[in-house]
Structure formats: C-alpha cells, structure tokens
Length: 388
Image 1 (cartoon, rainbow, N blue to C red):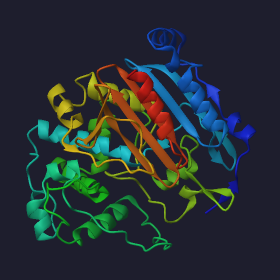
Image 2: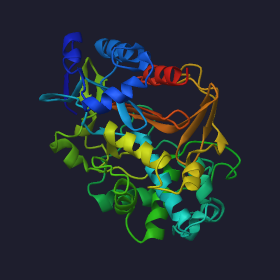
Image 3: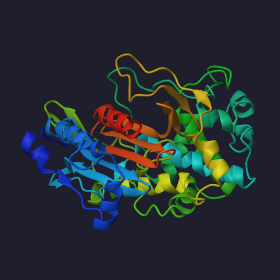
C-alpha cells in the first residue's frame, strides 16, 4: 500500500474553497437560512477549523428545499499527484449505500412483487434451513435477523486478497453467506447491525427483478432520481479516474492509500461501497422525501420511519446529538428537539460519511470524508443549528 507524508496545516488549507452554486439559487437559499448555517457562520467556521487542524478532509453541503446554502471542500482527493477535493468529487459512501438498497426493496414491495414478511429462503437458495425459513425481509431491513458472521480474521491478521471481477466478487460473498449457521438469536428479538443481512437483500432484489442488483439500482433508483454521478465503480475505475477520491488512512507518520491494496474490494454491493457526490445526495433526499419519484409517499414514509429502537451510543463515542434514536428500513431515524431526522452514516478504513434529512424543516446535511475522520462534531453542529 502506497503512502505519502502527512500534510502540513498550510497544505490542508490549500485544498479549501468556497463554492459558488449559482448566484440566484445560492442567494435565495441563504436568505432563508439562519446566519450560523450560512457562509462565514458557526458551522462554516467549525469545518474550516477542523480541516486546518488536520481533522477533516472532504466536503460538506447544507441545502434547504433542495438548494445549496453552503458547500465547502478541503484536503486532497489524491496525494500522488496532489489533487484537491472538489464539489463534484465522488466519495465512497460506505454504509450509506444501504439507503439505496432499502429503497429498491420498498419499490418491489410497492409493486406487489415482494412482501416484507416473506422468508428470505423464498428468493435465495442454499441458505442454512433455519435462516431460509425464519429470517424475513423485514428482519434484514431492520438488522433484527440475528444473521451474520464473526470476524474472519483475528486481531492483527490481514484479510486475504479480494476477488477480481464483478461476478466473482458477488459469488464469493454469496458462497460465504450460504455457509453461515443458524441465526445467533431469534429473528425479531434483538437489533444487531449486519452488513451480511443487507447483502442478502441485494440477492433478494436480483431474484425478484430478474436482473443483477447493480443493474436494478442503476435503472430504478439512480436513474429516476437523476443521480448522475452515483454508482458502483470497480476498483480499477476508482484508481484510474480523477473524479473519485482515493481513501487514506494514517500509518507510520504517513497516509496509506487504502484503495491501492489488493485487499480492497473490487466493487461495492448492497451493504456498502456505492460512490456519490454531495449534489446527488441532496437530489436523492429530495426525490425520496418531497417528490413522488422513487416511492409513493406512504412507502417513502415506511422506509424512513422508526421500526426498532437503536442501541444506546457508547460512552467513548456518543455520536451526534439525538433525544431518541431508531432504525427504519435502511435508514437511521432520530428525534431531536421534537424534530425528525432520517438518513444514514458510513465508516471504514479511509472513509467517514453522513446524510441527515430534516423532513419537517426542509434541510439536508451531507458530510463526506476520504479519511476515517471523526465527523460527529460536524454532523452534530449541523443538527443543533438546524433544529434550534
């Protein structure tokens, strides 16, 4: 894995910049925004300070009624050669991808092709009998299936090289899931986050739709919502195309390029690994919340509304503020100061992401980083200011 020296304060700020998002649109949006959410306000200053201290590399956008109020980009999308993050840079979304998968499932439910109480074994063959018969689509969507695997490597052990090829990547994961034993607990009795469960949902989508998961989401989610810069690039595309941000982790006083490793997945899937831009994510939020584009309003509410109580935050990382936390269908759901928030976060080596939608207030907050930065203070301040 290649590495470059850590950046100085000056070089971090060298990638910073205000973004002009159309004078008339920006002006009308800012006029409706509180001062602390506008350029030069409290939120803007916090992001700049964290970037200057080397604690944030990426892009933020605040939008009101679909119109950008504030967009800022900091740091580098590529360090060899140096290339700054830009407003149109595409970032790995990590687990934010689950929102797209959940919408795809809800579309099939809306069309009568699928039921939420269907056992997964009706659509996916070769699973352990207890999984096939007792785990439902609802359980997978809410992370209450008990299905999943322990870590495949022990502490300090490296995973094997990733499979090469789209079909090979998919089949390798499905082979692993078919080998897993019965659920660890009675489905529906507990909430435990499961990437494997969401990958199984992708297999359900493929079986019901008669096409691949990637093709279905491209045609029925990305296309209708006009997400022009959202998709599932292969690692070869990501490495070769300047439109994508590379992923970096600090290692031995330098930044290591996660995407250069032969262990980095070849292509993302139903649980993680889609890439997108801040503009596309605002469009997605608008299409899901305000427009009858992706789902009928009742089904959009079904996806984003609370289903199970989320586990309490850990004391060492409390996360962004919330009075109550829940999980819906592929969407986190919170209440803060009597206001609803839905969206999703994502994290992993070289990535930290978050989308917050405030449906009662018309605001959307997007934070995308190509480092495994702690973005909770940024996400949290946006929540505090929007719901103030």
